[in-house]
Image (cartoon, rainbow, N blue to C red; front, side):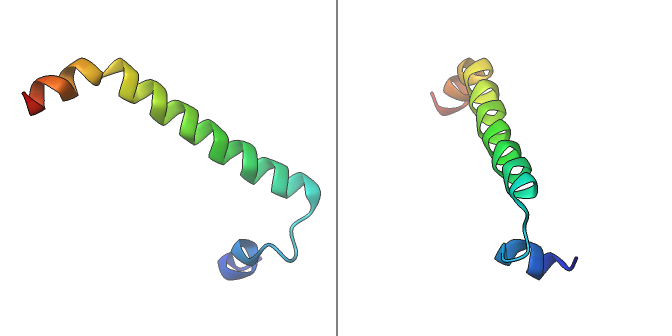
Length: 47
């Protein structure tokens, strides 16, 4: 499956769509945890 076909989503099965959705959700949660964990360091960079 070519990347463009995959991103259009027309040929995605429900299982593939669920995997993409949860991978994106996990990425958001991990990003939030990293920001929370290093918020003090980021704060010290600004001030």
